Length: 204
Image (cartoon, rainbow, N blue to C red; front, side, top):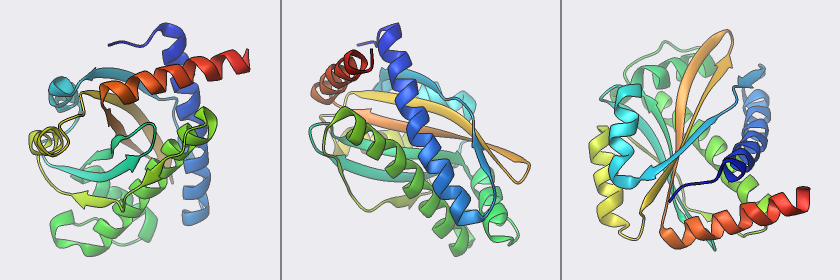
């Protein structure tokens, strides 16, 4: 299943709106301007998710995972390598960057950032596509990419496709790269595509 060029453009526009809201929230949180680059979007079967992300990230990751429910449902993840997550914590708190596995404040900061980004993007989807989306409490996982993908595939067997959004953001002259991954089933993908088509028609 693939998006048409128009659907891909509409999705990027929606994500840009969501990222803009996320940047505003992060700016209020940090007191600094946050710049988010225009995202790149790719859809692939969940079986190819690890192969797609592996060349772009290290082996050990910090992943904020949130399940969402509604007419469009699935799993949303913010994926960072642990070095970027530690630097992000240092930028936001002024405390030294330490390995996440021994640094509770880093875990809390990264989880909160993930919560802001995921809710802003998915909330924008819900508002503009006119579907109601509810969220679970986000949780942080420090595991290898293959382990994360495997657990989603096993625990949420109806999910088939991964929508991978790549963007970088700048904060206090530092640039960090993160990946927003939305994993959906066939029915939710079809609903999302219908909603995108309807939103495009209303906007034209």
